[in-house]
Picture 1 (tube, rainbow, N blue to C red):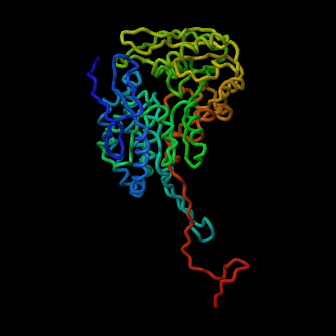
Picture 2: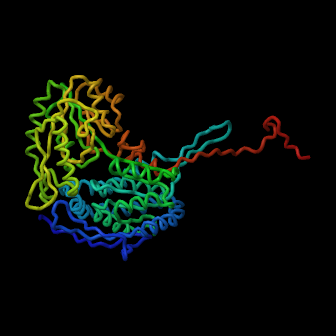
Picture 3: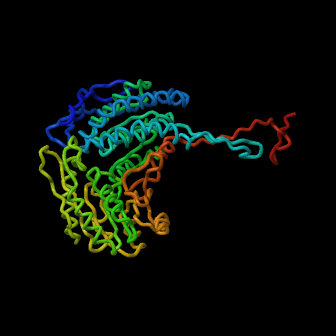
Length: 505
């Protein structure tokens, strides 16, 4: 291994400005690196009562934090940014150990943490700037202000265990909300290290809290009566459970960023080399464990054979291995992910899709959850096919062919998900058609489906989200617009409404 492992030991939950050890907890799990099953990062105990304590602490801290000036809150967050930037190396290593993704990916993610603070303070805050409207009513000015909501529960995913929750936490805090963050039980070490950095930044007690736990802990957090909003990134199935858990708490804001079954369309005039490279990145980066990953490729018949052959040859050569070896692909997250990935190979074959490249488990020097990439050729589009419409969250691609662009759009929209589509073509008219016809929240032109900009909104339609995009727009769901009419004029008795008599003499 190129560099020694940074030491991290379990500290408990971070509540009201300090770490609280778990004694007589409700359960325990091991945080084991999926890249090396002999690497036990830490043992985590969890206690459901701590969730209630963290929510109560956040509720208590809220009024004082919300009443601080924006400049005062900025000072605290710039302190957090300094710590994020100074600890990129340790954060990157923990991300790679916790997720199994290669170190270069871990470094890229760790660097996003500080830049998110920059972008939020310098750009996204403009979306909720105070606006004054003269003569909103005759001789009465109107003002639009955005106020904070209260306590925000942030429920994080495993695939980007630092960057994605950070994308909720930073806008929530700068807007004046307090936060209770529950990391994925697959990646608790990254969550704890984030809390350690917040501890060092010395935010007022209760403003940022962290609780560890299992799925039941997440359910308890989102349903807590002190929580005013839930900011979630993860699977459609868990997002649906959150919606169900909070049906009777209809006042809670839900920002649900869920899965994708994303398609790339490559037309006959495309720059083929670019399309192949970008689609390889889209399909196989992070071992396919991205909600924005490419899982379907729709090819024009004129270029289908050439694209497929070159794509297949390149996919065979992708390096796979331990995060420290800086390969292109690391491991899947756990044994269940491997089992699901292998099972979907069988489902594809059973549903009459041809296996061009079979995905299988790999037995490498480091014992972990490694698999090879896979490609299936779809002989006939079937909107009811389990394989063709399910999010696999692994390195698998289904290849379709059609020479009809409307049919390509129909295939794009058929899965129920609506996160990202990519189009490779020199024809701007096709791109403009896709902007209208594709039911997606992100549409890229001659660029792969994954790798989004924090300066743009990020969110999907259908099963991919609930129309509350994150990234640049996250500040909007962290605030409530408040309208005011401000009338400086004295009372004018000549303008009393008909039928009213205010004469008291």
